[in-house]
Image (cartoon, rainbow, N blue to C red; front, side):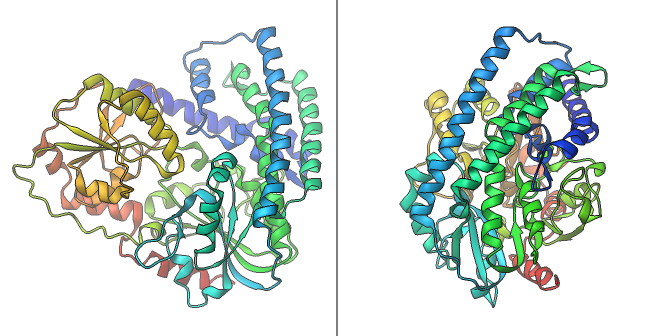
Length: 533
């Protein structure tokens, strides 16, 4: 518990530093592109403590444990060598990628009135369900369930370039069978625009280096954290910032040719999306921007947690000193509503979870008496794989059959990690079964911060969250689920685990996180969209 309190202190003090640092003011005056401060898309401001989060562990070592690392000349030389290698690699990769995308996906824009533009990420498109076509899992079937769906489009952003091109024709087939007109936004960025972005960001990088030569803005409560935060910030200039700007510029090029009334996205405040909100608001006849909560948002995921002094109610002041924002935010339940309302200055509506509209959450009939836990479903999310594996390795529980259901965004990567380390202990289901089907077949769900644990409890299956003191937690410990230290051996007492999740607790979890699981979130979505003018 003491160590988790240290992670909590790190979270709060880092968020406070990000909101007050003089870097924010310096960027807002000196490092702009198209009137937008690139501070809002730096690694420091993106605060991604889930993916590629080694910096966050290093920051804990420096700030909490006072293990101040001295930066050697060798480290500096090595950093800049890799910086420029990555910079040139990303520059040529971005140009090559755009050329390929134009070849395969460029479509002449039909200058027409588009009521609703659903902005999607390519890897979120799933196989059709029953009689439905391919769909974006974060929107569910809601784009198809509008009476005027011919006025809706998907605008798809391609990321994870290598993975995409390995399955290019599979994705092309998916896009063509979504039931809506679709466009690939990346195809609308010019080579000249990519060169412009890289050139401007490089000059901004030089300006930042000059500023940092005489200033050290990386002090948090009198502790010098520059050995971590300085290089974490500088690294984002080697391609990360540029990629976000290219995405937003591509989007702008598409939207300026169309009269789009509503721009809908589940990007929320995830890394990179604030440059998109700024670009949309640059349009002369701009659409309303609606952000949709797509996952399990909570205060321990830093890019869902902000200070209210980073925002303003005056739209004209956004983009420089203040963060760009969507006009509306549609959330799943009261849980995120309470957190978001502490800092988000615009309107928030509770609609429920769109992706769950196609699922039947009726509790599975299973006799609790004489129930023996034999089959355990392991559900890793993004960033919690290591201590789930450690738990399985350390205790090597005999008499249990383990299945695995990785997060869809990193499915292959996670599967590879588990196969390399615990293939002798875990059964890998290759039948293509969905997670909900695997839940029905299992007796217990074991997870880190995956929302699958919550889904299982609602379906009537017991679930246990594992916590590692060596890692920050990425869920709300008060969400109603059983949490156990991953280094403690679990006594799988079926009676105790089953009896914990009574109807009262399960209903409280449902209402708090998802409002209603009535397969009608799409109706609330369309009702709220119709009221936006």
